[in-house]
Structures are given as structure tokens and as C-alpha cells.
Image 1: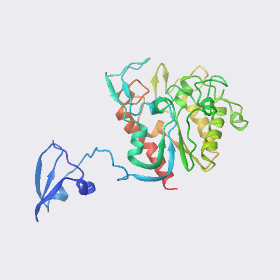
Image 2: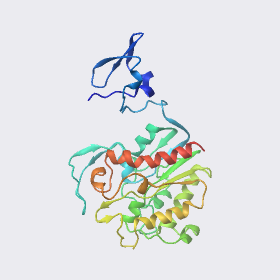
Image 3: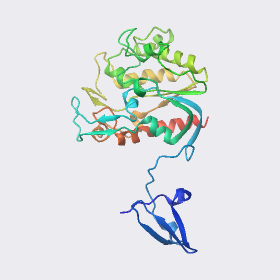
Length: 300
């Protein structure tokens, strides 16, 4: 079946011409040229336009700079990802693919003033927000305190925070809200959130917007969506701590990618490479709740 570009929406960009006053030639994506009477054009079913938007064309303008701060799922944007089995999870696929991830998909939808992805190769693979100790080098809170971390000093900014699947996997103690309030350090999830937020405000000012997220479903290395880690916590426990902090501020927004992405425990084999890291179908699903929240931010 031949595929057509969406005529009603993308007509100015189609390669088409008037045959005469009563017909139109449309070049289809399978290389054919079809002539339609103009009286019938509105009834033709056009579908599937996959080309990435050109700069400034068809994208929502966001009058802010954005800093994408995230773990390995963010790091995999633009990188080769290999399907593999992990723990109780067995993938039905094999081979590798080039990740078309969060950063690419969000910038196809939005036009930010600038976009930055700190971290080794664009993300902090394997890093948790909190640490297993106050000086844990794999804690984002510890990284935040390092002036040589490469994080940008940028005003009028949005920062994303997406790490808690690694806090769960690394068995980080959640602590208590008082750890956030008293700034007790990186050795608890609450304390690490305080360090990170203070550092982000120092770089981007008090008008910074924080867009934080819970974790997607997972079944990787025997850490699942419903299991408890060795610290006694579930993924939902870290989500509740994150929301408890976010609820105190008007400049924090929350992305419920766990429930609103459409990714479930049952469909993990179809949308991930290994029960955790997304394949490109998974990215196209998981980015939807991010888009909804960033559209809200854009309209403020």
C-alpha cells in the first residue's frame, strides 16, 4: 500500500503541481505520481510524515534554555544500543540499533533557546541521585558539588531530573524529609535532592524550572517494578520522596512516565532492549508525558 504525506497539514511542503484547473498531481513516497480531480482531493486518506522538522518549522517555541540531566536512558540518545538478556528478562530481539532518544525527540517537538546534555557522552550512565556514602563518586549530588563537572551556568532555564531507577538499583537509602530540610548530605535520597536543587539554583537562579520524573517500569538484573532493594525500598518509595519535595515549590513539575507512557511490565520485551533501556518504540512512547509537561511550561 502506498503512503502519502498529510495533504491537509503539509500541503505547502509537498512536491505537487496542478495538472489543470480540475486535477492535482501528488508524488507519493513510493515514487508514483497520481492525478486526482480537485473535487476528490479532500477525500483522499493521507498518512505518515516521518521527516524530522526543520529548524523553526512546526515546533513549539519555548523561551527558555534547557539542560537535560539524566541517566543511561538519556545517554543512549544517538548511540548504538544492543539488545540483551538481563536477569529474569529475555528479549525476543537481537542486534543493535541507533537510539533516537529523549533529547532528539523533544527537540523535534520544541524549539528551545539552547539545549545542553551534561555528563559523559550526554548522560550519567549508572549514576544515582543519592549516594551509598557522602562521597560516592556515582552520586549526582556529589557530581553537583564538583565545579569542574561541566554543568552550564545559564539563566532562564529548565532542568530535567531523571535518576531514581538507579537510586533503586544502587540501594540508596531514602532517609527522611528532614534530611532535605537540614541539608544532611548525599548519603540519602532526600539529602541528595537538596544538594542538587541548591546547585541548580546557583547555576540558573531562583526562577529556574525543574522538571522531574519517576522511573519507568523495569525488569533488569533482578530489580523489578515491584521488588524491594536491599535498603528495603521500592521504586514507588523513591517516587513518593521526589513528589514530597516537588510539592513544596511552584517551579517544580512532575512527569509521570511510569503510568502515562503506556509502558507496562507486560510489554517491556517489546519496548526495551534489556528490560530497562528503551528501544526506539519505547522512546516514542516514553517521551509523550514529557512533551505534555513541557508544553505546560512553555505556556507559562
